[in-house]
Length: 167
View (cartoon, rainbow, N blue to C red):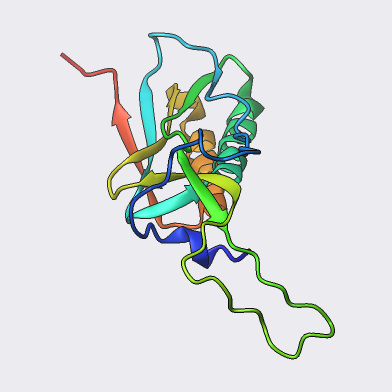
């Protein structure tokens, strides 16, 4: 299965699970990690810059990479949350390409296919992951988001918001 087949969102998203036997389970273990608190100074957002579909295993890899990097400062020094959910069912109509075959099978155009995974459709400007940190861990969080963005396969940017407004 090639990633290029599933990266661009084409057509209507298919989300009806009741018609599919052997539904794929989401690989995302948890959507939030760290210590939730009101006292964080900065909010970081990993934002997609183009329209794309992100597979559930890529989302989990990005979440894990960001959390592991930020956890170097301690489990209670940050709070991160995955903001997208993989609803879209990805299907693949497998073709036969055996050693004896001198050409690929073409058959059944527009076939339904077997469910192979899940994906989240992301629009430009949509937040994928957000994290809350203090100023002492800001550079660590930026690093974590840089590593996480390399797992997603789409161009992203990191937005930083200061939550402690000076009055």
